[in-house]
Image 1 (tube, one colour):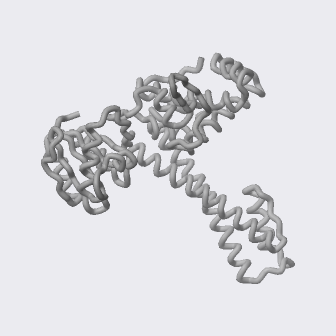
Image 2 (tube, helix red, strand yellow; image 1 turned 90 degrees about the vertical axis):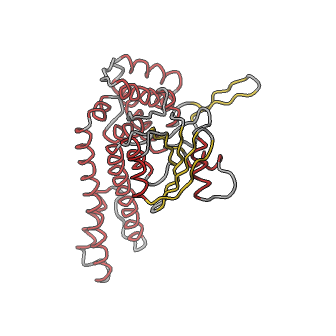
Image 3 (cartoon, one colour; image 1 turned 30 degrees about the horizontal axis):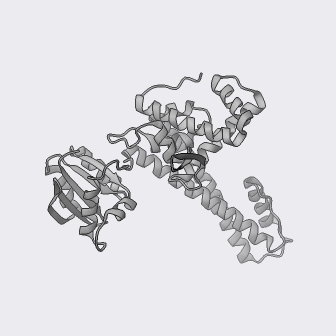
Length: 341
């Protein structure tokens, strides 16, 4: 870190910039976005800290381009440090003061590629949620009229088509037209999910670091993208090891110690990225099922099989997901390829 430290409180149109030299406040001023861009370009290299919020990744990238040492800090930590009332000046000062704390866990800033991949992934997740909600809504509304549709995606579309074509069913013209619109809307959602999947595949093929994660057991396109977003190497890497990365995702046991006695519990119920953890465990569970059906063929599968016998299938799946994260971290940090043992 540089001796001069800057805390930046971001907003949509106004940015508060607090500068500390040593531990003395030299300025705490308000800037527009254009003024802040110019300030980044003209200032000597300093350590700049941003509160992790909307637009923080963009400014993080701009600060690095301008030669500064950029960091992202969680809003929870800033709130704990802030003194007095919540104002832009106090927030910017608190952000700068967090840089003086020992052992601060900074948030991993994302590159432009990671941001764009995450955006595609978020749009895909939104389309899946909308599709599921639309299917359940259509099925439940027709059930109120004693019209039963299958629960599968294809069954719902075929059943809905049959309802629209069946003139003997007592439905008004207006309601038939409404169901027709709902059917088209559902088909569009299904089509959109397919397009998002295609774009994810194309993005993976264009990113070698992301592509090599597909070789890991239980990792498909979705998990490869999520791991690349969470662990992708940047100028400022917050994880000291793969173990720390796995703990952040929530795949390590909870530790509780008191009076010199240490107890290892289960994985935590709450974690920072529950979606990633659940998808990794689901992918690992597919490997467990494969070992059950076809037997162990590699050293890792033999290790997994032994763990399944000692601790059960679910515990083995969590252990494999933990190992997957640590391996992915090593591949990305050391720029190596994965070779299954």
